[in-house]
Length: 618
Ligand code: F6R
Image (cartoon, rainbow, N blue to C red; front, side):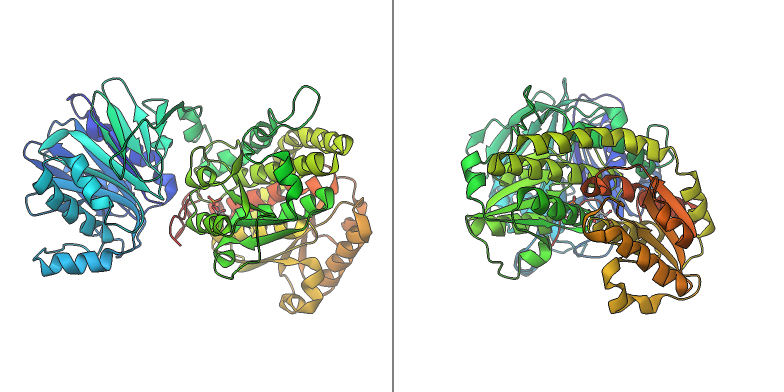
């Protein structure tokens, strides 16, 4: 979750500092609690680091003379080892000569033993971080080799854990060296200047040409070029690609917050995720599936692993895939799956869902599944990220960069991609083309319906503003409305810091109904009146039950569903669609509600407290 930027370029006034600060600003969305930069100037490395927001760092930098320099690194930190203090902020220095600075994302698992050894050797530490251990080790290795790349290679081979590292040394002023294991690092290729970033947002304002690094690789950038080697020293080429996200896509585009912008991008997120999935005959074609049709026919069970919002997308996927493809689907939180000895084998298809592709819990679940022989597919929004790279196949969602910490458009794109996967399984395993085409054509109409829905959110916003002092909100849903209720509750917790719970409406009578007291607001996600097994009527009865006990009922129902009117304090209408696709619509008012309530409370919508965008620790 830390943000990392590295730059080396021409010696023009303030350019290195400007690029690195700009990169850190664009990486703010990853979540951070301190920040710092190091500039190579003359015989030493200078810079500043501060706890808190980037403005603290900017102030600290303005208070000191800074050198003209070609080379800089920067970092936004989310505390793991050691609290969010100035001392623990990165960059960290190694040695005592102020020549080396290093930044790090991830966790060095064997840092205790390495630190103990360094202390025994007389090294004095100025922070509690695992990173400072690495800085001292690289500084020492440099003293032996006189070459930063060689020093980095010597050290990374002694480290355990997950890390991206960047280092600069004043004896090699035109060089930044990066290394990665289990943690992201991308190279940006410019003209007479080159960049490193924890993702492309770090340098998207300067270049679109990027280079993907493999696992366990070291990259050395200079103004003129770059070299890549494996940790064992073998030269490598890296994989060059063109970044298709434009700079404006990474900014707010006229909205007050990234989250609001991203909610409004949802019609595109769904449409783009559907784009290019069928051939001219209407057959689904998934280019990066990675598994043959024969492989998919041999599967006898699916397990979906994910965390948070992505796990709720997985719950929606279970209802759809089981219904359409008639294959058993389990959904499990990735951090639980990994440690409970799951019964899976080579006939199991493990599908991970992750916006970032870097969530450590999900990555570990994928690795565990592979160890047990399962086939793995990832549904992911971030090209070249670790989870899809380590999976047999991938189905990329095309939601574009999601900057707000709370996930919105990625959720809709994940659900859309899961539907596509389910339909592909129908095509391959059940040979039913017509049913597939029917659902695909209903899916094609969803973006327009989301657009329409977004145009009718005024009342939802009003309700939210009136509820700014509310202490608890409950959410009920059934069938695919159940994960939507959970997601609505999660959004409210994250954004407005209000206690919120999502329940399966059928579970109400088994306990949660005791929470209902006069005035208690309850959102109810009502299934379509066309739903099978009389589900609609059952949920309408649930609304009556809670209303009778004084609940304030906020009902999300399809256009034309008149049955809910007598029991609803408020009816929020969503356009009609087929029952299984409804989550793509019903969740939207809940996202808008949480956003508006958070705004009404004056909270930081894009960066809620205690949260990080990409959770790269277990
Ligand atoms: C909630 C949210 C998180 C993420 C979860 C997984 O708004 O954003 O719950 O969904 O941390 O993240 P990814 O999808 O990146 O694996």
